[in-house]
Image (tube, rainbow, N blue to C red; front, side, top):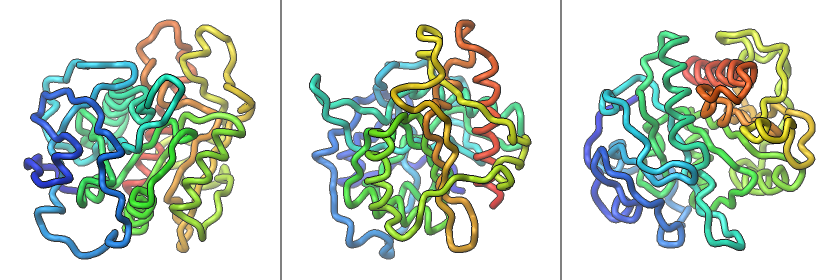
Length: 293
Protein backbone atom coordinates (compact mmCIF):
# COMPACT_ATOMS: atom_id res chain seq x y z
CA UNK A 1 0.00 0.00 0.00
CA UNK A 2 1.23 3.49 -0.78
CA UNK A 3 1.16 5.59 2.36
CA UNK A 4 2.76 8.89 1.35
CA UNK A 5 0.64 12.03 1.28
CA UNK A 6 1.13 13.99 -1.95
CA UNK A 7 -1.26 16.78 -2.83
CA UNK A 8 -3.90 15.81 -5.40
CA UNK A 9 -4.82 18.40 -8.00
CA UNK A 10 -7.36 18.49 -10.80
CA UNK A 11 -11.13 18.74 -11.16
CA UNK A 12 -11.95 15.74 -8.98
CA UNK A 13 -9.84 17.01 -6.10
CA UNK A 14 -11.38 20.47 -6.37
CA UNK A 15 -14.90 19.05 -6.35
CA UNK A 16 -14.15 16.91 -3.31
CA UNK A 17 -12.60 19.81 -1.43
CA UNK A 18 -9.20 18.30 -0.65
CA UNK A 19 -7.43 20.50 1.85
CA UNK A 20 -4.42 20.85 4.10
CA UNK A 21 -3.68 18.25 6.72
CA UNK A 22 -5.44 20.03 9.58
CA UNK A 23 -8.34 21.48 7.60
CA UNK A 24 -11.90 20.61 8.57
CA UNK A 25 -14.13 20.86 5.52
CA UNK A 26 -17.86 20.65 4.83
CA UNK A 27 -18.80 17.39 3.07
CA UNK A 28 -18.86 17.72 -0.72
CA UNK A 29 -22.11 18.31 -2.57
CA UNK A 30 -22.77 14.99 -4.29
CA UNK A 31 -24.81 16.63 -7.02
CA UNK A 32 -21.67 18.43 -8.21
CA UNK A 33 -19.55 15.28 -8.47
CA UNK A 34 -19.08 13.31 -11.71
CA UNK A 35 -21.27 10.28 -12.41
CA UNK A 36 -19.91 8.68 -15.56
CA UNK A 37 -19.31 4.95 -15.14
CA UNK A 38 -18.14 3.67 -18.59
CA UNK A 39 -14.44 4.42 -18.04
CA UNK A 40 -14.17 2.69 -14.66
CA UNK A 41 -11.24 0.28 -14.72
CA UNK A 42 -9.58 1.94 -17.73
CA UNK A 43 -5.86 2.59 -17.68
CA UNK A 44 -4.97 5.86 -15.94
CA UNK A 45 -1.83 7.92 -15.42
CA UNK A 46 0.44 8.02 -12.39
CA UNK A 47 -0.99 11.32 -11.20
CA UNK A 48 -4.51 9.88 -10.99
CA UNK A 49 -3.20 6.89 -9.02
CA UNK A 50 -1.68 8.88 -6.16
CA UNK A 51 -3.38 8.70 -2.74
CA UNK A 52 -5.20 11.83 -1.66
CA UNK A 53 -4.13 14.26 1.01
CA UNK A 54 -5.53 13.51 4.46
CA UNK A 55 -8.47 15.79 5.21
CA UNK A 56 -11.18 16.03 7.83
CA UNK A 57 -14.86 16.67 7.17
CA UNK A 58 -17.57 18.01 9.43
CA UNK A 59 -19.35 14.96 10.73
CA UNK A 60 -22.95 14.47 11.75
CA UNK A 61 -21.92 14.25 15.41
CA UNK A 62 -18.45 15.84 15.54
CA UNK A 63 -16.73 18.93 14.20
CA UNK A 64 -13.07 19.79 14.68
CA UNK A 65 -12.40 16.51 16.46
CA UNK A 66 -8.89 16.76 17.99
CA UNK A 67 -6.14 15.22 15.90
CA UNK A 68 -3.68 12.79 17.53
CA UNK A 69 -0.12 14.12 17.54
CA UNK A 70 1.05 11.45 15.07
CA UNK A 71 -1.77 11.91 12.58
CA UNK A 72 0.64 12.56 9.69
CA UNK A 73 2.75 9.43 10.29
CA UNK A 74 2.07 6.78 7.60
CA UNK A 75 1.03 3.25 8.50
CA UNK A 76 0.69 -0.10 6.75
CA UNK A 77 -3.08 -0.15 7.41
CA UNK A 78 -5.53 2.75 7.36
CA UNK A 79 -9.21 2.90 8.29
CA UNK A 80 -10.72 3.98 4.95
CA UNK A 81 -14.29 5.32 5.17
CA UNK A 82 -16.48 5.23 2.07
CA UNK A 83 -18.15 8.53 1.15
CA UNK A 84 -21.50 8.30 -0.62
CA UNK A 85 -24.08 10.82 -1.77
CA UNK A 86 -25.99 12.71 0.94
CA UNK A 87 -29.39 11.31 1.87
CA UNK A 88 -32.48 13.51 1.38
CA UNK A 89 -34.63 13.92 4.51
CA UNK A 90 -37.60 16.17 5.42
CA UNK A 91 -35.06 18.39 7.19
CA UNK A 92 -32.57 18.65 4.32
CA UNK A 93 -29.77 16.46 3.02
CA UNK A 94 -27.91 14.38 5.59
CA UNK A 95 -24.41 13.01 5.16
CA UNK A 96 -25.03 9.61 6.72
CA UNK A 97 -21.56 8.41 5.75
CA UNK A 98 -20.19 10.65 8.53
CA UNK A 99 -22.12 8.91 11.34
CA UNK A 100 -19.70 8.08 14.23
CA UNK A 101 -16.91 9.77 12.25
CA UNK A 102 -14.11 10.25 13.13
CA UNK A 103 -14.22 8.98 16.70
CA UNK A 104 -15.09 5.36 15.89
CA UNK A 105 -12.47 5.20 13.14
CA UNK A 106 -9.69 6.35 15.44
CA UNK A 107 -10.75 4.05 18.27
CA UNK A 108 -10.63 1.01 15.98
CA UNK A 109 -7.28 2.15 14.59
CA UNK A 110 -5.94 2.36 18.14
CA UNK A 111 -7.27 -1.13 18.89
CA UNK A 112 -5.59 -2.55 15.78
CA UNK A 113 -2.32 -0.99 16.98
CA UNK A 114 -2.61 -2.40 20.48
CA UNK A 115 -4.03 -5.85 19.79
CA UNK A 116 -2.19 -6.85 16.60
CA UNK A 117 1.23 -6.37 15.03
CA UNK A 118 -0.25 -4.27 12.24
CA UNK A 119 1.18 -0.75 12.09
CA UNK A 120 -2.08 1.18 11.85
CA UNK A 121 -2.20 4.89 11.05
CA UNK A 122 -3.81 6.83 13.87
CA UNK A 123 -6.31 8.66 11.64
CA UNK A 124 -8.84 7.56 9.06
CA UNK A 125 -9.03 8.29 5.34
CA UNK A 126 -12.33 9.49 3.80
CA UNK A 127 -12.48 7.87 0.35
CA UNK A 128 -14.68 8.92 -2.56
CA UNK A 129 -15.30 6.86 -5.67
CA UNK A 130 -15.26 10.08 -7.70
CA UNK A 131 -11.69 10.96 -6.72
CA UNK A 132 -9.65 9.50 -9.60
CA UNK A 133 -7.99 6.21 -8.52
CA UNK A 134 -7.63 7.06 -4.84
CA UNK A 135 -9.92 4.23 -3.71
CA UNK A 136 -7.40 1.63 -4.89
CA UNK A 137 -4.81 2.84 -2.37
CA UNK A 138 -6.89 1.69 0.62
CA UNK A 139 -7.60 -2.07 0.44
CA UNK A 140 -9.94 -2.16 3.48
CA UNK A 141 -13.02 0.02 3.07
CA UNK A 142 -15.83 0.67 5.58
CA UNK A 143 -19.35 1.94 4.89
CA UNK A 144 -21.79 3.04 7.60
CA UNK A 145 -25.57 3.60 7.56
CA UNK A 146 -25.80 1.75 4.26
CA UNK A 147 -29.53 1.24 4.85
CA UNK A 148 -29.89 4.80 3.56
CA UNK A 149 -27.41 4.95 0.71
CA UNK A 150 -28.35 5.21 -2.95
CA UNK A 151 -25.24 4.49 -4.99
CA UNK A 152 -24.78 6.32 -8.26
CA UNK A 153 -23.75 4.37 -11.36
CA UNK A 154 -20.18 5.59 -10.93
CA UNK A 155 -20.03 4.65 -7.23
CA UNK A 156 -21.42 1.16 -7.88
CA UNK A 157 -19.04 0.52 -10.78
CA UNK A 158 -16.02 1.83 -8.86
CA UNK A 159 -16.88 -0.21 -5.77
CA UNK A 160 -17.19 -3.35 -7.92
CA UNK A 161 -13.86 -2.64 -9.61
CA UNK A 162 -12.20 -1.95 -6.25
CA UNK A 163 -13.38 -5.32 -4.89
CA UNK A 164 -12.53 -7.23 -8.07
CA UNK A 165 -8.96 -5.90 -7.82
CA UNK A 166 -8.62 -7.41 -4.34
CA UNK A 167 -10.26 -4.82 -2.10
CA UNK A 168 -12.41 -5.72 0.92
CA UNK A 169 -15.61 -3.87 1.83
CA UNK A 170 -17.21 -3.96 5.28
CA UNK A 171 -20.55 -2.29 6.00
CA UNK A 172 -22.37 -1.78 9.27
CA UNK A 173 -25.06 0.04 11.25
CA UNK A 174 -28.32 -0.58 9.44
CA UNK A 175 -31.40 -2.20 10.85
CA UNK A 176 -34.66 -3.88 9.95
CA UNK A 177 -36.47 -4.83 6.78
CA UNK A 178 -36.75 -1.45 5.05
CA UNK A 179 -33.09 -0.56 5.52
CA UNK A 180 -32.06 -4.02 4.33
CA UNK A 181 -34.06 -3.61 1.14
CA UNK A 182 -32.55 -0.17 0.54
CA UNK A 183 -29.05 -1.52 1.07
CA UNK A 184 -29.62 -4.58 -1.12
CA UNK A 185 -30.95 -2.49 -4.02
CA UNK A 186 -27.66 -0.59 -4.29
CA UNK A 187 -25.54 -3.67 -3.61
CA UNK A 188 -27.36 -5.38 -6.47
CA UNK A 189 -25.97 -2.63 -8.72
CA UNK A 190 -22.48 -3.51 -7.49
CA UNK A 191 -22.84 -7.31 -7.77
CA UNK A 192 -25.87 -8.30 -9.87
CA UNK A 193 -24.25 -11.72 -10.36
CA UNK A 194 -23.33 -12.65 -6.79
CA UNK A 195 -25.72 -13.59 -3.96
CA UNK A 196 -25.69 -12.29 -0.41
CA UNK A 197 -25.39 -15.26 1.96
CA UNK A 198 -25.04 -15.91 5.68
CA UNK A 199 -21.41 -16.33 6.76
CA UNK A 200 -20.99 -19.74 8.42
CA UNK A 201 -19.38 -19.93 11.86
CA UNK A 202 -16.59 -22.01 10.33
CA UNK A 203 -15.50 -19.24 7.95
CA UNK A 204 -11.88 -18.12 8.53
CA UNK A 205 -13.03 -14.54 9.08
CA UNK A 206 -14.36 -15.57 12.49
CA UNK A 207 -11.07 -17.26 13.44
CA UNK A 208 -8.21 -15.06 12.18
CA UNK A 209 -7.27 -13.59 15.57
CA UNK A 210 -10.23 -14.34 17.83
CA UNK A 211 -12.55 -17.34 17.72
CA UNK A 212 -15.98 -15.77 17.36
CA UNK A 213 -18.35 -18.75 17.33
CA UNK A 214 -20.40 -17.22 20.13
CA UNK A 215 -21.49 -13.81 18.89
CA UNK A 216 -24.37 -11.66 20.06
CA UNK A 217 -26.15 -8.54 18.91
CA UNK A 218 -24.07 -5.39 19.38
CA UNK A 219 -26.36 -2.38 19.88
CA UNK A 220 -25.78 1.27 19.21
CA UNK A 221 -25.48 3.92 21.89
CA UNK A 222 -29.27 4.07 21.97
CA UNK A 223 -29.07 1.02 24.28
CA UNK A 224 -27.96 3.36 27.07
CA UNK A 225 -31.37 5.07 26.95
CA UNK A 226 -33.70 2.36 25.64
CA UNK A 227 -32.28 -0.86 27.07
CA UNK A 228 -32.93 -2.48 23.67
CA UNK A 229 -30.26 -4.22 21.65
CA UNK A 230 -32.34 -3.96 18.46
CA UNK A 231 -33.61 -1.10 16.32
CA UNK A 232 -36.77 -1.06 14.17
CA UNK A 233 -37.67 -4.68 13.37
CA UNK A 234 -34.05 -5.83 13.35
CA UNK A 235 -34.43 -8.22 16.25
CA UNK A 236 -31.69 -10.66 15.23
CA UNK A 237 -28.10 -9.80 14.31
CA UNK A 238 -27.10 -11.17 10.90
CA UNK A 239 -23.52 -11.66 9.72
CA UNK A 240 -23.77 -11.88 5.95
CA UNK A 241 -21.45 -11.50 3.02
CA UNK A 242 -20.58 -11.88 -0.64
CA UNK A 243 -17.91 -14.32 -1.85
CA UNK A 244 -15.84 -14.19 -5.02
CA UNK A 245 -15.37 -17.08 -7.44
CA UNK A 246 -12.44 -18.39 -5.37
CA UNK A 247 -14.44 -18.59 -2.14
CA UNK A 248 -12.90 -15.47 -0.61
CA UNK A 249 -15.22 -13.26 1.37
CA UNK A 250 -15.02 -9.84 -0.29
CA UNK A 251 -18.00 -8.03 1.28
CA UNK A 252 -18.78 -8.37 5.01
CA UNK A 253 -22.28 -7.19 5.89
CA UNK A 254 -23.12 -6.47 9.54
CA UNK A 255 -26.93 -6.16 9.64
CA UNK A 256 -29.01 -5.39 12.74
CA UNK A 257 -26.00 -4.29 14.77
CA UNK A 258 -23.94 -1.15 15.28
CA UNK A 259 -20.26 -1.98 15.53
CA UNK A 260 -19.40 1.63 14.75
CA UNK A 261 -21.06 2.75 17.98
CA UNK A 262 -19.31 -0.02 19.92
CA UNK A 263 -15.96 1.44 18.77
CA UNK A 264 -17.06 5.05 19.14
CA UNK A 265 -18.34 4.60 22.70
CA UNK A 266 -15.64 2.28 23.98
CA UNK A 267 -14.59 5.03 26.41
CA UNK A 268 -18.16 5.90 27.41
CA UNK A 269 -18.76 4.57 30.96
CA UNK A 270 -22.51 4.33 30.28
CA UNK A 271 -22.07 2.00 27.29
CA UNK A 272 -21.61 -1.65 28.39
CA UNK A 273 -18.09 -2.99 27.95
CA UNK A 274 -19.27 -6.37 26.64
CA UNK A 275 -20.52 -4.76 23.43
CA UNK A 276 -17.33 -2.83 22.73
CA UNK A 277 -15.30 -5.95 23.53
CA UNK A 278 -17.10 -7.99 20.86
CA UNK A 279 -17.23 -5.06 18.43
CA UNK A 280 -13.45 -4.65 18.53
CA UNK A 281 -12.89 -8.38 18.12
CA UNK A 282 -15.12 -8.49 15.06
CA UNK A 283 -13.46 -5.41 13.56
CA UNK A 284 -9.95 -6.75 14.15
CA UNK A 285 -10.83 -10.14 12.66
CA UNK A 286 -12.23 -8.45 9.58
CA UNK A 287 -9.16 -6.25 9.18
CA UNK A 288 -6.72 -9.13 9.57
CA UNK A 289 -8.75 -11.35 7.23
CA UNK A 290 -8.76 -8.61 4.59
CA UNK A 291 -4.99 -8.14 4.93
CA UNK A 292 -4.16 -11.84 4.73
CA UNK A 293 -6.65 -13.42 2.30
